[in-house]
Image 1 (cartoon, one colour):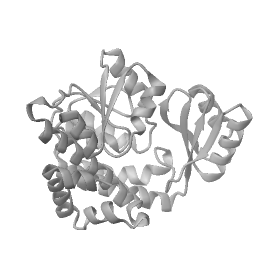
Image 2: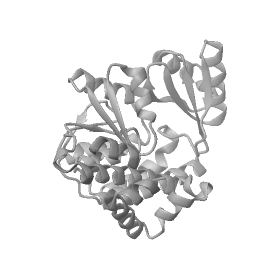
Image 3: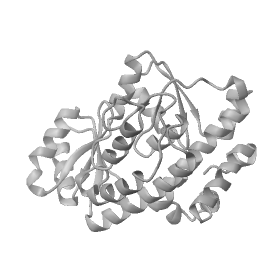
Image 4: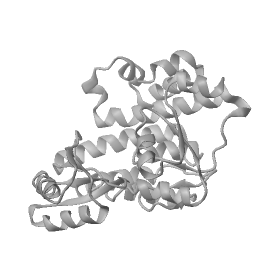
Length: 294
């Protein structure tokens, strides 16, 4: 992950060098060579995704020079909000790397304290999924937490409650229910220990006023001021992510050209479900950046 970027662009390689120094371990080696079980640890995967994303962004900016696409707003899904804040110059890269490594560690620890899981419900309206979670409440904590696009909602909570909600979703006509391979019940009340610990870390970091507005996960509204940003990052751990609403906010305000910067193309796929008329350019590989800037 990210190896082609480093081979093609010095700016990307320098980003990994900087991250290695900040973290105190060889993230570059893990990203390029694995092993996979080490890369998928939450405390490693979170900084890895951030670093690959910023490496791609810096590579694109270096290659395009004055011709780099103008950025008028930014957004990122869950962990991606940190990348968006770095891009918007509200958060320094080195602080973001430290925070997401701590975030991953705290989420792992919270998952050990409060075991949980997640599942994706496909083919039901948002309100139906919310109602299902309420109906099975006697089984334990479960909530709708990721509103990714119309007809796709992730639920999160205690294993028995998530299973009960998944079974009921099938009974109510869900096209598909997919158990997610995650360490715990992210974005639910079970992450409260992680939220408490991360709050203390975020309070130590200096944030700047964002150069461009960033759409917050928890509200689907713009944030620019440091206190707004801090609140968004803290609340994100125990509250739903309204990605569909965030994209709806941007579309409503006239944005029609989007760039997905980082590993994979999940967000481009979600946009096709949100509004197929909007163009998304995926910039996660050296080839894609070279095609954009040639």
